[in-house]
Image 1: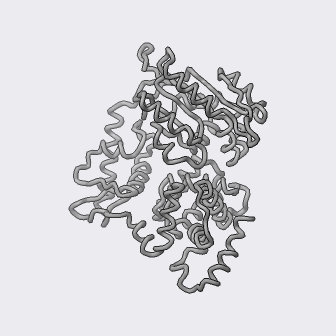
Image 2: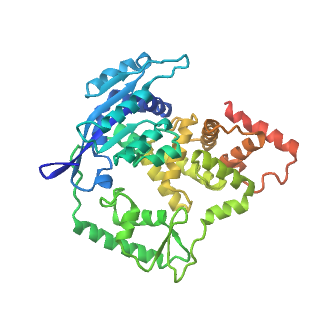
Image 3: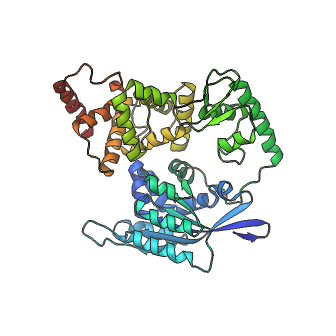
Length: 439
């Protein structure tokens, strides 16, 4: 990190796998792909300030000195000038095989490794691609003590995400970098310690008042929603980035933080420690076969593990939100999460984001139905899950197809699904529901 006057500067190198990002954005909404391809200056300005405080502290400015873009000129030639005009070095990567395989990934890796020995010491490497083949590159960059930021649109390999220092959230990139007004490229605003201390003091009082009335451990998501609502805080948490650092500053020594998913705060003098998420325990108890299947799906795809009725509630919250407000991934996910909290549903923001993206990838178009169709959203969620499992080389048998649809299609969420059905009835039900994949 260099110093320019009183401001610290982070030198960054940016590598854009254009075909990968554009295609996946366009799958969600053609407008997203178009904005990404035709206005790189817009999202570049956003990248220049994104996560600066969380990664580097206050009073830091990011300078993206090296800008590389790799695209297929046979398909995306029309977008090339937009990147050239914004000081990108554009490498044409035409197809080399009959299947359309290009050399973009090889060019990107070679250029990134060359940048390690560049006379300019690059503090960060920003890679816009969801291609898990770059996992070894991220590991190599980490071995050289360089920070890596990645943007992946759609399904992301857990190994790829774990290898990066910071994953740029897809919903934030779409909602803020592509759709919202351009942010000013200034150093991160310094929040006065006195302001933070006052908010922390007030937040601690809010948490204590609430905890004293609760008979059991409280999920951290509930406390975060309550504190933000009472204090009028934004999602930056006074420059601390997340709720947990804000909570730790409160010094609530009378309470204990449990790491049990999804995270709890409890009073050891009054509450039993949360040995296990009660919702997970309830899921396993009520739907034992479905629970085991859901866990396998989660390990393969990162699909949220929620009970069928909680999926149903989440889908209804999405429909209710879209009946009142236009769809915007960032704002919609926040509002839906808040609706779920008010209804007592054990749904995190990450669950909402995952499902919104999955529904869109499954073919549902938000805002094009009147009223919004819970059934159609569920069918799209099923299609998306099925596609992700296929990518993970898991070909579902008939019984597993029925489990998947019974889990994610609300009308199937009831009790022991096999208790009153013989094998013939079950096969008929599977065949009937399988039509969802073909519609």
